[in-house]
Image (cartoon, rainbow, N blue to C red; front, side, top):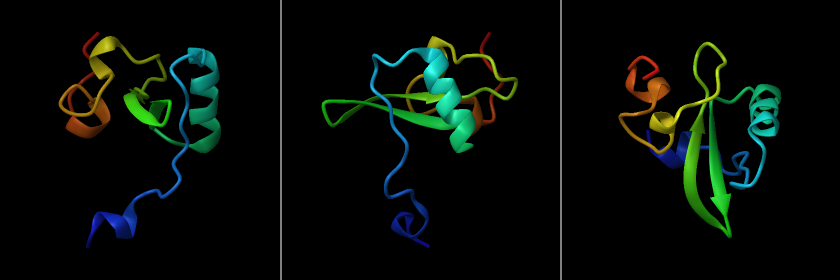
Length: 77
């Protein structure tokens, strides 16, 4: 299986100036756990929803080991 076979072609994205409450509502409505943050057509970050619904911390921004959804690690706070 290739990523192109399972990836989201047009994922839901927000700009970095969007209020956190709006981003959280969009994630809830879209039933997504990861929200790419895009400014001027470039990926600048990733917002990751935590299992308990609390806003993400600085450690959960970005892609990689800080992501509790991807790494299986507990929320750092």
